[in-house]
Image (cartoon, rainbow, N blue to C red; front, side, top):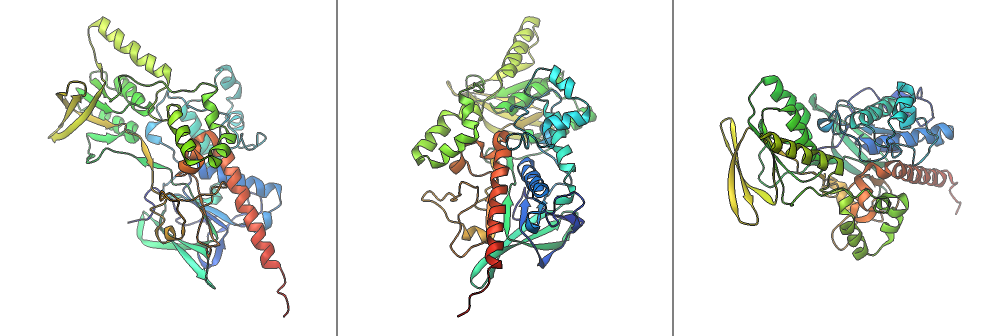
Length: 474
């Protein structure tokens, strides 16, 4: 079993060459202890893509940054970000200005606006008078940026282990073992002075949930629905569990794609909670808010998380809430109600019987239960970090933890390690306890990437200078 289930890794071809600035500075990917990287990124989603851009641009501006060598390892066969939820009319929930670079460097040619200009849609987008692009458009922007850095990433590969390498009593390197999922018997080991783990989130499911052809997580929504439509299989009823944005989007999408089916939305709230995107509340996503959060006492951090959960967790855009409400009312007027809201309710039991899924729903105020004979059950129950602290394998033992057994992480996103460890571990995600709500969000991706870039290069320069110091004579 691979160490990083959602982690990424290389296969063959080319990867991080000496950081000399231009796209032509590419060398054949090497492995083994004789070829040492200064940074290997595990995962190549938006977070590490932003870091790759920051390093690339720093190289171009500094004529090579003293031969800093970096590359990124990606499990997927190509760049992809929540592909299963790229609904045709869904929009981003963050401004296009919070792209991969603008908050760090507004002059970067990796910005969303530069992407629009290259695609010939800049004027058209401006005429839309919106800050929020289509989600499929923003994903295409990510792919456009990733395609410009293909020499820095290996796709179709998987990180299986990260092991410490000790010299003279110090852990100076990590050996990153990878395998190609298409050739599981083959593996490659690459040595690096630092790693940056950005393995993203994985689907969260209720305990004992069993997935099947008729029961799936909403992360698979589009391909699963396409499969159902192609099969011409009659769908009489679909049930969606969840109260957040993804759940509401899944309900709306299923209602449109399956015109003959009843769509039942099950959630424990009385109604969907509107997302708080008001100007003052949104300050929790400002880069300066990370500084304040990081230095705050533990009880203040918890209060901030509790106060502002409505900006991100289990909330829905008010426009979508109103659209679903209008749909329900119109159906009542017409006498055909296909959209049902089973609020203040929970799913208590799921049983599969042939081509049917029987879902027992309890109405919480009275305890009354109803059994829904459904053709589809969709768990829109969110995502969770991939347990970075637990899944670091051997090097997890080198990481220091606080009194609540959470990883200690510096302001520069670098894990605090034992005194004898000089190799570095950076995290993008899994740091909500130290850096706040934005640790896994796009809001500060560009800024966070810039901070990690500066830290990595500064430590590299310091180590290089120390290595070049002449040895004193006794």
